[in-house]
Image (cartoon, rainbow, N blue to C red; front, top):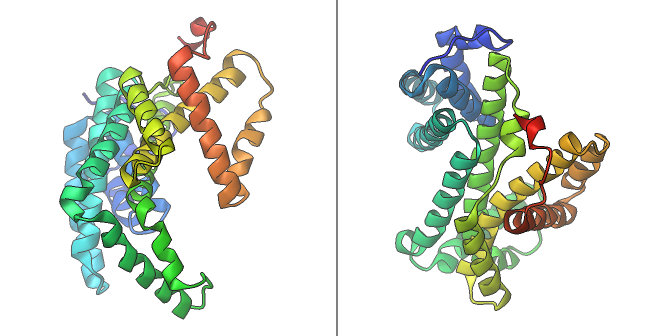
Length: 299
């Protein structure tokens, strides 16, 4: 259902041509595509899924026209945009309907899990699918002057690629959802924190994560590793919610959050270790509850 807007983002929400153009123009530019998805989420939450869906159709037409005029490969980009915006539309509608971020994020992780499970049906031998593509990528980077080592060494990443791609898709869509919900809350003059601080993956995803973790520990193959990566992304977000909860509700010093996010800027090894730590915190919270007391402060 459409809602009246009075906050700082009202000028964009109330100017359809401008927001449609923003959704279209931001999508092709790397990390800015997250803002494109976030705008779709915001409009869905504030104006309803029908108006947001119409925006997506108009943005898709605009994007296709712009890319075609520039001589780019518009079918690939348009297909990616349709998938990304369609997912953002579903996530935003779910968040608005049930007034929570937990359900849409759970849905997103389940979709990522399903994508991993369907990969063998769609790609055949997933390791054989990724290996030559990784080697070709390494050669292309080398020809561009980017030192990446021997191209054949890239083939070693092939067993992880399905999980990495699915986990990256889950993470990018999660960021778009969180940003869009934050934009919507600010526009409505409401608090975003209670939504994020109560984020929880739930028992079903907890059981799946435990089973995948055991299977990965026993080295049962790429599928177990891929599921750990996807499910771990959801629990890492829950872990971050736990840490923010401790600062917000328990009164821990706010600057501690700088230390929480700092490892993400210190290179791939530090980033991976920090992400695993967030996921472990989220998994423990999911099983035993690390956010007890202080619930009145979140209402």
